[in-house]
Length: 465
Ligand code: ARG
Image 1 (cartoon, rainbow, N blue to C red):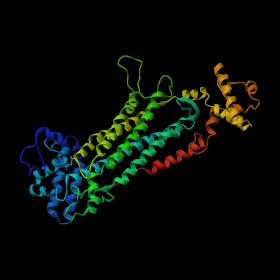
Image 2: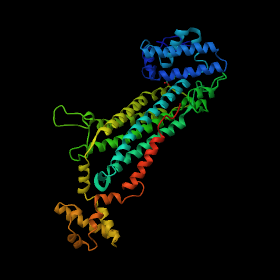
Image 3: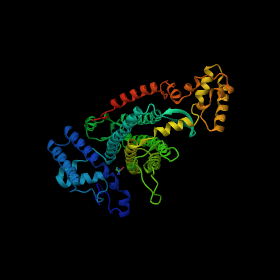
Image 4: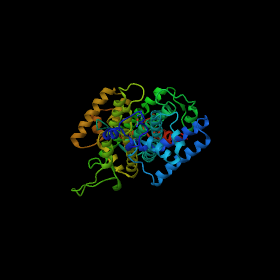
């Protein structure tokens, strides 16, 4: 048992208590962030005269050697330590002796862990953002290639009106654009440094909090030391953004599963992204999409967990907050993996354009346009709706499409129909006459695709440092 405290205790900690309390098994993830924070802290301590330059250099060198040894595998982060902070400090003292004991001057584990969590979340925000940008690049390509790939658009999972594959994919593009902007908002709000808040009430040392903040790439220091150690809003926001990303991926998964089914056959997933059945030799299953849909639950659970942890906590730090980590790590890992796999699956799937177009033709998706045609020829919309409804029934009884009804038969139902009706209700016309921005028509789609291109190019590169 390696603990940073114990001076006021007369008994050893009970073994069960020790393990219940310890966090090393999961906060070892913060190793690099913890060292980075310590290097900034001692740099600042030397700048304000609390450490000598020589002490600072020995400490930084010691900290760097710990990182080297962990990277090389010669030093292991074991459960012998209570938490990652103890691991780093104990090893530093082992290596450089007395000077190492000054590492924690003007610092508490409360502001230290708040810093580590922030550094970690900040790194992960940008990693998740990279995942979103990668999936958006694939969506962008699919949109560019498919402005004339016709398919049915659905409401209530019933064929509604014809759209294009580009237009359908474009809906997800908008969702992921909003996700990216949400991550950016979180970054902007959270990017203030809690280090220097101490346990809760700041410190008596003349710390230069501006300097530490700057060294660590923050916009500046946080402005209330109690809030600094008690704030986990950014974790809530991150998990909320992750839950929303998973909602989008899960809805998309559901559609891929449907499209890949024997009934739809709109797409075929690549063999590398499908799995087989142990008993049914003919099967090729969309397990990746199903797992993404399935894993959405655990990310929602993480959000629920942090909200519940935080809701009753008095200021400032409480040990409950140690529970902010494991679910968050799991959610972040899940979102990143799901984004990566989903992107690969999309990038490699084959489109069955013939099947999509056939399906769009067979579901009376041009019925609204047939009614609009009558309206343009002087019929009131409600009457036009009724006439076309009768035509649909007529077709259903005969197993035909609206555009297959001969002109005389159309005219027998409404004399307003003329020879140009066939052009007016062709798939191409139905889609391409819809050209207000946001609609599936080619001109409108090209405009949006140009805007997306600009959007993606502007987002190349990092947010910070
Ligand atoms: N492991 C703790 C956590 O994750 C670090 C902070 C400990 N602070 C304390 N006062 N015991 O929250």
